[in-house]
Image 1 (cartoon, rainbow, N blue to C red):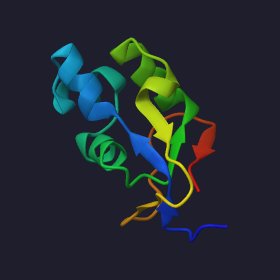
Image 2 (cartoon, helix red, strand yellow; image 1 turned 180 degrees about the vertical axis):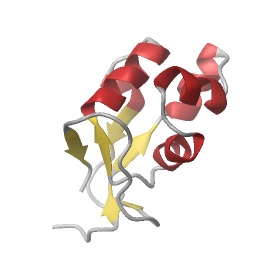
Image 3 (cartoon, rainbow, N blue to C red; image 1 turned 45 degrees about the vertical axis):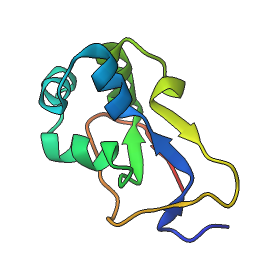
Length: 96
């Protein structure tokens, strides 16, 4: 099992923002989360995301969860530098 601070999830928010001509601030406003929490998620440092946040992101970006995230092959872990961040909603999906 990987260490608690490693994961293989790659976040594609930057690409989706560019494709849609949006800024991170625009997206934070549309989704209803803080710019700081969205930045943590965008940079791959979030340890979890609530399903309601995932739903709001997909709705704001007109995409599916698989457009936002991919899982890298074994041996390609990405290090996390921060502890868990809760963004809005109820149920949570863990990336560890």
